[in-house]
Every structure is written in C-alpha cells, then in structure tokens.
Image 1 (cartoon, rainbow, N blue to C red):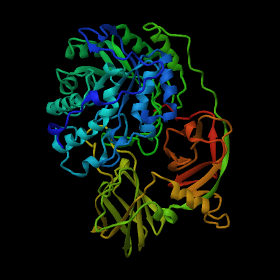
Image 2 (image 1 turned 90 degrees about the vertical axis):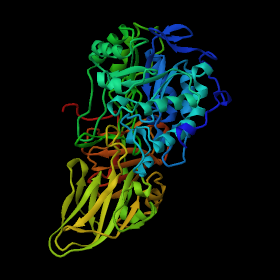
Image 3 (image 1 turned 30 degrees about the vertical axis):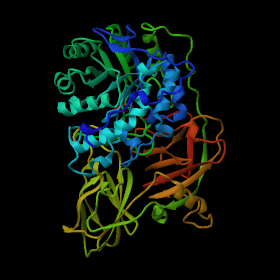
Length: 619
C-alpha cells in the first residue's frame, strides 16, 4: 500500500504499557517553546545519552539505563533498526533483544524520558544503515526518496511500530518526548516530498510529540535535510560555538540541541582503535550545556555488533566496521564506567542535581583457557547449512534471499596450461578453492577481480564469499552482495553454477556434527592446528558469574558462537584482539564454544583474558 492509502491508527485504542514503580506522571505535556523545551510549561534542558537496545543484551538494559541516570542524564535516545525487526518481507520481530516496548518501559521505570529515532534510515554504522536488504531486490525501489515501493514498505514498518511507540508517548503516560524524522538527510538528498511524506505518516500512525530532524551544522546540509514544520537539531562533537551559531541561523526559534554529541568514534578492520581526549570532550560538553543547549551524548554506551550486524563505509575503499562498537564511550563495551564517564559526571553536576548513587568500578574478569576438542571441515557439514540452487550465471546472494554472512559458489572447470579466473566484482571477500585446496583471495577493499589458477587446473572450483557488512552511508546503500556480474576463465564465460547460502543464524547443525565427531578419527580429533575453512569446538565451566573477554590474538579470520549466541567476527587485521562475551549467554557449567576459522591458526586452545583489548590507537 502507498502512504496515501495507509489507514490511520486509532491511538486511543492502543493499550497503555504497564507502569513501573517509579514511572513518570500519568500524563504530561511536552512542547517546543520560543526558547526552550517545555515540560508541563516549564523549561527542560534535555540531558540524553544514546543506547542502542539492539546492540546490548536485553538482560543488561536495566544496568545501562540505571548508569545513565547515575551519570546525571534525564533521557535515553535510541534508533530503531528496521532490518533487525524485519529480516525478511512480512516479518516484524519484537522478541528478546528486539523488545523495544520493554526497553522503553525500563527507561520509564528509572523516571527518565526517551527519544526514539525510527529512521527509516539510521546509519549508526549498522548494516545497510538499518534498511532491510530485501527492499532493494526490485531495482526500481527508491532509496531514501518519495518512491511508491519504498514508501509502501515504510508505511508497513511504521504501522508495526505504532502499537509500541504511540501508547508510550509522554501525553499518554509513557517516556517518549521526541521522535526524529529520517537521519542526517541533508548529507544524502533533498527530496522534500519524501521528508514531508515521512512526517505525515508519523503523525498519521498516532505520534503526537514534537518531531525533529538532525544534520551536521553545515549550511547546505541543514537546508536540504529539514522542513519548516520540523525542529532542526545538529550532530557534532567540537567547535561548539560555531556550530550552535550555524544551527541557530537555520532554527531561529526554539531550543538548540546537539542530538549527536560525538564523544568518540567507531573502528574499522585494518585501522587503529579510535579514542578522543577526555579533557577535550568534557570541555566541549561543558561549553554546549553552558550555552543552554540540550544534548544527546552519542554514544553513552556503544555495545557490540553481534552476529553479522556491522555496517561498512565505501568512499572509494571499502572499510567494514569491527564487531566492537565500544566507541570510546563513557560506558565501555561491557557497560563499565570509564574515566570519561566520571569526567562527564563532573560536568553534568553543574547543570543538574546528582545523588550519591554511583556505579561500581569495573573489576578484572576471570582468566582461563580450554582446549579445542573436535574439528569438522566446512566441506563436511556444508550440506547441513542450506540448500543448493542451480544457475547458469552466478547470482547475487540477494537474488537468493540471503542477506548476511557467507555464500558458497561452486562450478567445474577443465583448463590446459596457465589460467586466470576473474569476476566482474566481489562483495565483499571471496576465498577461492580448487578441489578444496586454497588458491587465493579476491578482496573488495583491494579492488581484486582476478587471480591465477594452478597450471592445468581442473576439477571443482569453490568460492566462499563473505558479506562483510553492508554500506551504511552514502550512495552505495542498498547494493547487493555476493558475486556481481559474470565470471570468466581465460576470458571465456564460466557457466553452470551451484550456489548455497550458508544459514549460520542457527549453529546447532554444526554443533551436532562436532559433538558426534569421533576422537579416533584423525580428521576430527583435537587439532595440532586449524586449517580452514574449519569449525572447532571447546567446552568450559564458568569460574564466576559475569562477562568474559575472549582472546582472538593469534587467530586468522572467522566467527565465534557461545551456547548458540553469535559473538561476531574476529580478524587478525585488527585493531580489536578480544571479543566481548555477555554474561547472560553463559551458564555455570558446560558452556559450548563453536569457532569458524576461515584461514589458519596454530592455536589449539581458547583463552579468556581479564580485560578487553581493542587494539592500537596510533594511526
């Protein structure tokens, strides 16, 4: 359906959330005044921190929200990751870590307000900027513009969100005080009809709180990314006076707000770990608040790109983002207060009363190791991980309805003499095997398209193609993954392909094969080394409750699961050298770790260390 025909939601018919013990008043009025945000007619300086519920284990939500309040904040902000809720057409999941309603109720239970940013595009260094990949299987679908197919899908998404966010607005007794329309749109486009359609749809589903936009405080971006009827805010982390003045020129009345105060930055594989000087960030925050502006600290707590959820950038060179989204935030990846947390707390104490309630300092985590017990080559379990499709030309992964992880391409070749294999484009990294022996890698970030095969190459040619994260910013949003375009051997088309999308969302089929592997079988026994692509298994007991940090130094490249929960990717390229293990996924005894090593490592044990290692900070 198009937005023009989308039915309105009867907000009064939507159920109210159950009130928490310290919930906000039954109803309040939140408005944008001539100079201030007004709560029941009184000025309110919004002191907010960003928490992405989809990057935090749900059993940790309460802890992170409480630490935000202890810092001195009065508001929590979150994006809504559309593609996490709707991984396939017709789906909308709200269970477990996607229970946005529960997250908002926990915010209310702490007596705090909430800002919701549903996008539909969020960037957030999240795969595809939060847009579902299936949207773009139809090449005519618009990307962030007023195109019927795109807008129809957004309408469905917003109507699924309505029962969650509408009854949780402040004028209905909930915590939500602001809802954002789109996200830094001025850096991408200037389709005012699209912005207006989004704003109208937001109102039509029952949102009554004020609507905002955000853009970097540059004249052209603020002009392109806003509408007169939407309150403009800025995203920046320095040059406070200059940027507030620029924002004021485009938002002549009402409160000034930095709705993304960048206090750190994200990391990409192969680069250094980003940090920002604590004293500079604290000074900038102080200057911002002294000017009377409201703030949303981005990030208060970054969390983790669990599974295959990380995004990527491509400004000429493709750069996938790391598993850790620590962001050098006041709360680290494990939710512990950092020196930046305490520096920000001193600043916030100037602008809001602080109690004596403080979070406890971090303590070292247990250090121990466990042996790898069994191994199974990928080739031995591949048929348990999906279904083969036969095509004459290699399809993209998206054509097969596969939107993350790995896709295996297979064909038969028979060459005399030297030979060269080439593809039009690989997205994003292909390991090439001839008769299961590694031949080489075609890497997008190196702009690789061709490699030499051994002389007289004949037999089975396999390409294990990894989607390393969909571009989350700029014109390459929505592009398909896998092998793109034809493949050639010595210039001649290679036809007749079998393709298998690997379903790793549930790792149990691999775990079953590993448990069944006989110790008497040398190919499956405890390894002297791992030669990939191979799965390996370890088990361990937990010395004490809480989180762990898994040491990945010395490993090649791959993915780790513990008790079926995907921690995410590791890579010797760095910078990060550990993976964060949330305590709630662990049990006291018989924890099961599954490792997928794509290349090779001499490691025969898995090791847990006392603290995270996110890598070097020098460029």
